[in-house]
Length: 193
Image (cartoon, rainbow, N blue to C red; front, side):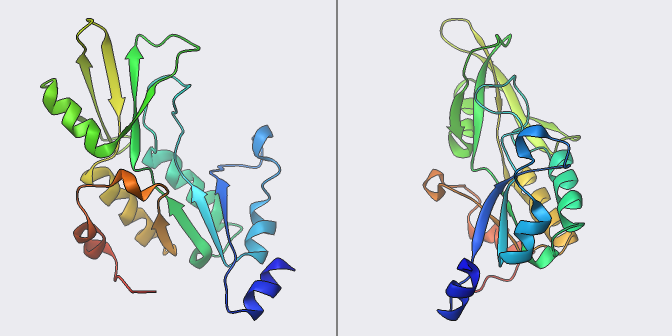
């Protein structure tokens, strides 16, 4: 009903949903991708936070899980309706990880600046297509930081193109991302809406 009312006014209906790789995940059963996809114009999948502030260290948006999410979704929803959400942030964990501790969120740009400040080489996980590094702070505590950079964002854009999805999207644009529009132009035609 909402879609029909919005459509009559020249609007589209978009919904944001958590990433889902199967129907067997108990806390995600309420998100019927097929049913939702049948009525909305676009479905924004929040394809991030596989590792989050309350979890053990690891990639925030591993390409392996994004691919599994896309393959699960396109079996139920037309690819032209799918928008893949990407993070403009990462997390800084103190290690060894202690259950119950909370990592600090960090923008991608601040992660790079922190690696430079502590002279920590940025590593890159070929498996997860995600950058990370470790450093020791002034108190001698070891930290592990996972975030996004040009390489990881490029890979996400390639996969959106590979599966012919509608787009990528991000929340909280104020966090910024150093590469700017040139990276988007590399993979997509930019249109003003």
